[in-house]
Amino acid sequence: MNNLELPTEKDPDITSTDETSILVVIVDTNPGQKMLRENPNVLTHVVDSVIGFANSHLMQKAPNKLAIMACHSKTSKFIYPGSTKPLDIRQIDGQYEAFTSVEKTTKQNLSSLLNTENSTIATESLLAGAMAMALCFIAKTQRTKPPGAKINCRMLVVTGSGDSASQYMNYMNVFFTAQKQNTVIDVCALDQHLSLLQQGCDITNGLYLKVPQLQGLLQYLLWVFLPEPPVREKLVLPPPVKVDYRAACFCHRELIDIGFVCSVCLSIFCKFCPICTTCHTVFKIPGPLAAVKPKKKKMKI
Ligand SMILES: [Zn+2]
Ligand SMILES: [Zn+2]
Image (tube, rainbow, N blue to C red; front, side):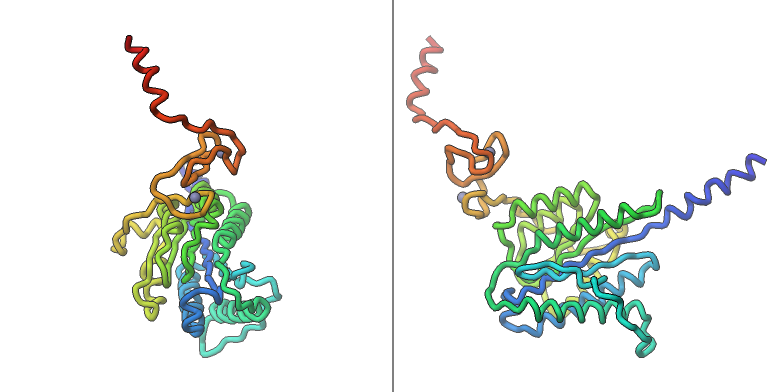
């Protein structure tokens, strides 16, 4: 009798090994991006590709979860699932209603965001803030998961902005939190190489890709970023590029190879700084080397 009872005890384990996947896509919609200033229509192409990619993610497994965020110059917002009440969706051309819902909600929330935040001043996108919000969303979803369930969490950043060292600290906090939370950070660079975000991908075992041709964006997204991280090692993906691990100095926010590091708080400076601007520790100004030499001679005698 005992033997017969064993399989029923194991049954819950069998169902709980079903892995689901949360994907948060962060789309940079800042009109100040170089590629959007040159051709504003690119945004439509990018958003359409992201929606196609997001629907493919939902198509892979029924319990898969999705969120799409718009990252702007002044604010970051979840555009799917939005805060507004769900739209009245009817089947169009035989398309699955959930996909229509993703497309319509995303486009409606994005257009309302673009209308309210229509600033012409070119400021940098708040990517680090948007990534922190995505981490909060993932943490919240993980807390409500059924016990024993395994969830693969990842976020994909799609941006044409340049890398800004002014958000260096925020980026590093996000990267190490993501690493601790087992969240993979993938980055799809549309226009410029992003050395700081590339570090984030490397820290969290994510993938970094600078898209060679914007026309084929959807194809790159589906090929590189759609497979879940555990599957990726079995696929032939673009070879990893060498990661630029330079840090930004805290005084000028510029990337440096060699610098001074505060021994108390590990702040980085490009020049010697007698008082650390972060933790206010006072350092002695290093004296001339000549003064040290005679002492050594005395020791020898
Ligand atoms: Zn500096
Ligand atoms: Zn310090």
